[in-house]
Picture 1 (cartoon, rainbow, N blue to C red):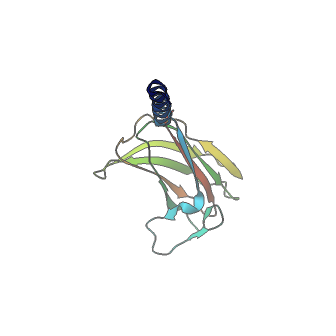
Picture 2: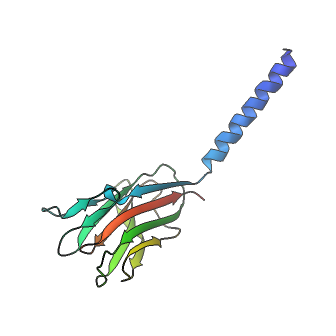
Picture 3: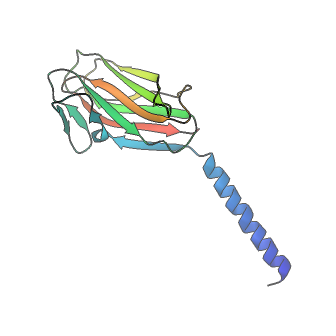
Amino acid sequence: MKPKKKLSCFALVLVATITVMTSSLYASDTKFYPGNMCVEMGDTTPEISYHNNYAQNNSTGSSWFSCSIVRDLNDVISDWDVTINRNGNTWDAWDITLWSTNLDGGYGNFDTISVSATNGVRSIDGGSVANYQNDGLLFIQSNVPDGCRFHRYAIKEGN
């Protein structure tokens, strides 16, 4: 192969590699988590039960669940949602909050969605989030009413 052809092939491969790397830097990233990744908080007697794809509150009152989120892009949170099942409990209020912490441990509640008293499985969209800690951690917390199930949660980083 002639030197000019080798240089042209090398340049073409280099441009293609840079293009692929640059486009992946700006891609969005959606992660889905099963509800059984959530843990019960602040209770000495565990009242959470774990099933194939969900966590259920088995207490006679509400229990706090905390659900971790992997953060691998330092980008906007363009969407988040949860799937829950009221499982017959239609009288308790249910708020689900997406939290952000900075590296110093300071908290910033930056989005809350309220679940109506409609029975059955529901997916609730939290939408985009403008104010969050760029360098921090993300997690969802919810005071889950008795008998209710937390099935799935998802977060989308990037546009």
